[in-house]
Amino acid sequence: MLPDGFTRFPWYRRWFGRRSERWAAKFLRRSGFWIIGQNIQDTLGEIDLLAIDGGCVVIVEVRSSESRSLDDLARTVNLEKQRRLTDATVRFVKRRKLWNVPVRFDVLAVRWPPESREPEVLHLRHAFQAVGRFQLHS
Image 1 (cartoon, one colour):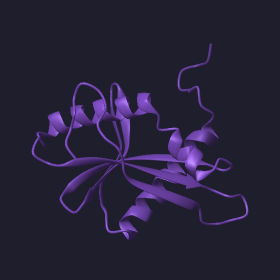
Image 2: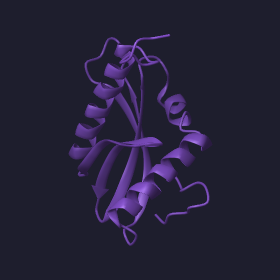
Image 3: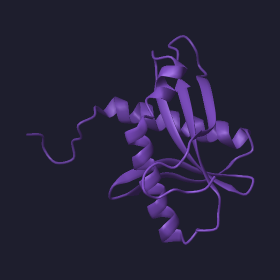
């Protein structure tokens, strides 16, 4: 049994993920997005990045790796992850009373090649539609 404060993920994995999310936010700002939230947590899930693009709220899932291809990273946002993101988004929209605001889901795959200072990126806009019993519009 691990002492309190430890997590099932090693410290470097959390650091690597946070580094990628910070870079993703910077990338989106340069692309004209307005970042309004990072690591939005509730009891059942997390939204990596919350942004505004035009008049649309964008839920951004960030995936990162040193070795996997960008396409493989994007594919890791499977149906179960899409359902969890949809549920987290519905709870967020309900708490903030944003029922009349369009919402879309993007995936940002970030690959950090060891020999490079800048990562490679694949930004999939409208990566998927809401999944589950609560269907949002996009």
